[in-house]
Length: 140
Image (cartoon, rainbow, N blue to C red):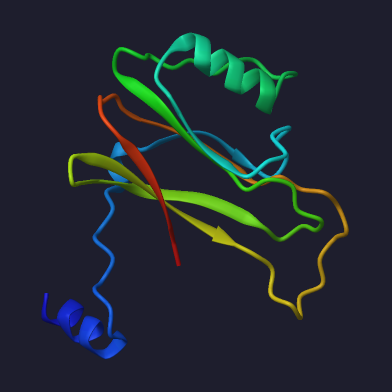
């Protein structure tokens, strides 16, 4: 705890609250989604899940989700003009009555040679079902 306080005092900002990884089951993650726009999504029922999956990967079988126990959260980075981009859901936490889904985006460094190919990074995960608000937080 003292290390967190020291880091906070040194950085001049409060530390990011911890996320909890065990409450997360990755359904699909990669760089080739048919979702071209950057967006975050929460899915709480089978009909919405089928619609999201058809927009994401219509040529692949719909993964099973038990919506009585789980809901789906997803982060789509949108189209990028090179390889080297990634998005990863880091975990979740409760904050102010809402579920916060923490995710991290990475981009290739300027000096790195990348393939000139269109990519659309994404991460789709199942988390325990809950009612109420869900917020997404991009972390560094």
